[in-house]
Image (cartoon, rainbow, N blue to C red; front, side, top):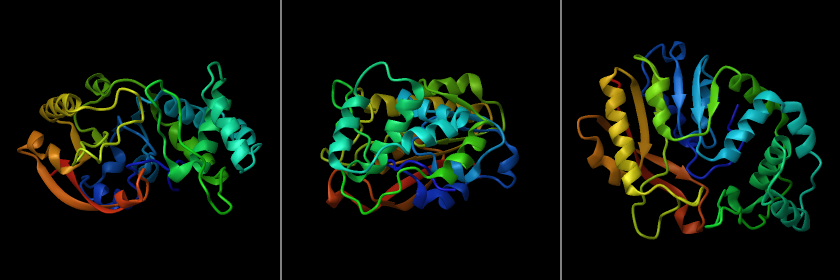
Length: 266
């Protein structure tokens, strides 16, 4: 299956490069992904045990609903038609408080499939503000993928908290894949607006310190990020890769970009 959601920074084009860093027999190890996003790597592996996490509480709710109530999600999301008036009405509804988990998840799916370029963006007040997208017959409800994802998610714990939860959740020999918001390579390329707080350099430093702690405990990891963070990971294997980026606020920001994979796996 493919990832259900379109997600900025998604790893569809890099899945095989990422998995090539994993050890033989990785399928039998517990797997943890603290920045799940669209989950391309997770849904390719579909591990037998572990944890997935995203600080975006609405995204975490979306995956819990897929896990626990896939049929209800499919039924609710299938009610909505694809047109501009419906989009903005549902966007306003999505920005209201008090939605039940199934409706919230169905609206997230609809807005993701019909909003401009698959963006998830909120303003300083935490309100989703992506405009309507123009598509030809978009597939809003991928029924087969939702059913497969539901089964995969039943085997792991779904969290929505700070990435430091890993210190209590992992054991020696586990595999962790980390795909945090990337450090911008220029002042104009920053896109950390999945939440109002963003992911500043201080968080990149804190993440690197946590990763060194995991390494000291015998935990295996692979990290994706942009080249500016290389200096934080001296001593680890670093590989340059080219990733295809189809989601960006500007068309000039799409296409092939250089990224890095950092790992302690030999």
